[in-house]
Image 1 (cartoon, rainbow, N blue to C red):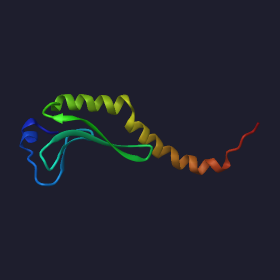
Image 2: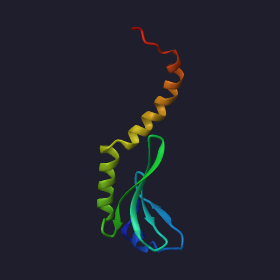
Image 3: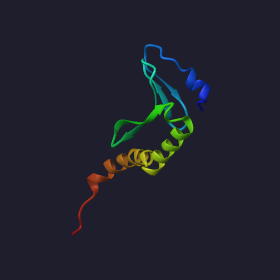
Image 4: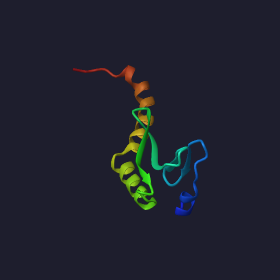
Length: 101
């Protein structure tokens, strides 16, 4: 879990890097020193990145709240989990399914 001191102390290194927070939320630090709150997830099997806002305009508490709302209100985690569980089942049963009408 990140603290304001850790975030403020994160200086650009010439390469982008990430500082992990909670539940997949992370702070992205660009080579120029811009800091933004982000979350990586899969949607329909494709990698996506959600950017919430820039630090310090969006503080750590607000980033966590917005992340929680996004992740659980829109079900990105649930969709990925359901898809991963359902695809093997569908592949094995689909060839034997038939329409009885």
